[in-house]
Length: 182
Image (tube, rainbow, N blue to C red; front, side, top):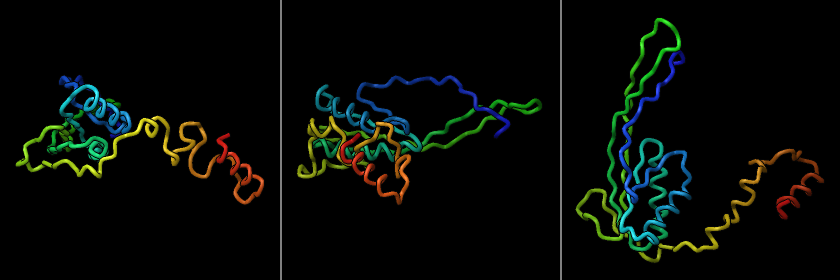
């Protein structure tokens, strides 16, 4: 396929309801959870619908579980399916014909509702016990958790940048730097 480039074909966008959230692999989980909880707690929605395809399915399941552990009494109904997506490819070299490929992509739809859903549905789950639900505290949400210190400040990851392991003074400086956030 190195002799071809994929052509974006215009898609017919289906309208998205306010209570429908389409999860992508690029989107941040925190943003999806914030939007969902806002809909359920502040905007007066009785249900939200989380939809995803392909690699975003795992993230969607995790998001629904986190929401259920933040809001009391949410019923869940899950349905799975699949769809075919056709990609168009244009040749980069003369003498080659355009190609069409079809991918079979899995989909998931998770409905979270304050009201009871169809209990006879295969994908129905009753609300989790109240003692397992922990409402989100404002303080907890505004700041990052202690385990997240330093992220987003350009400090790098892993062992750090420029620290030579085995040098005592460098270790002392690194410890001071980590402790006081300098």
